Image (cartoon, rainbow, N blue to C red; front, side, top):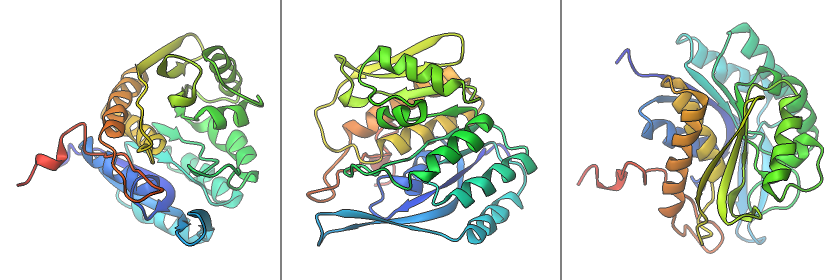
Length: 274
């Protein structure tokens, strides 16, 4: 049991199970790591109002108490963030990282819920740029989030991704991986990694499906779990790409609005116990 690696997610809760800390914990389990969580916010989707998202932040002190519970068990092997409910939580988290000398930090700069077109808590973006990126091993923005972090209005092409990655890297983060997804103007679904010296492209076929709820969270969580198990950044991103592609291929319709990815697809989890 002592060989089991420990990974913490500090993120919002998605009761639909596809994204947020629920996606993170499922991914950690599939990677053979032990997942902890600190809930920063609760996200709901209203079926009576066109599935509109509402975000309820958790009090900063309660978020800190959750983290203290986790840290009482000793040093972590990795940590991943998702939706962070307030600037105060971001400030607190930056102090926790320093105090506990946390390494293998994956910052997923969640700024918008899938299916929504408004930035969630825009004031958090600046705090993430200033306080978390300089402490991060890697950050995992999608095209929209990359544009927000880099100060670029639209990121549509691979060349745009490269420019955005350069600008984000200048914020002090050690590595940047931008998730291209199916909206990228390219034949393939391309993720781009930049380590300050070179660009690495990870390609997969674009999948004609809307069952991709939680794909971004899953990808970032997979990178965190890979780093916790000792993978290099390049290898962790490569494995996360494979894991997430399988999860999207295995996605299903939860209801007429939400189609979550299937986190157990890569390991064929549905066949484990019969």
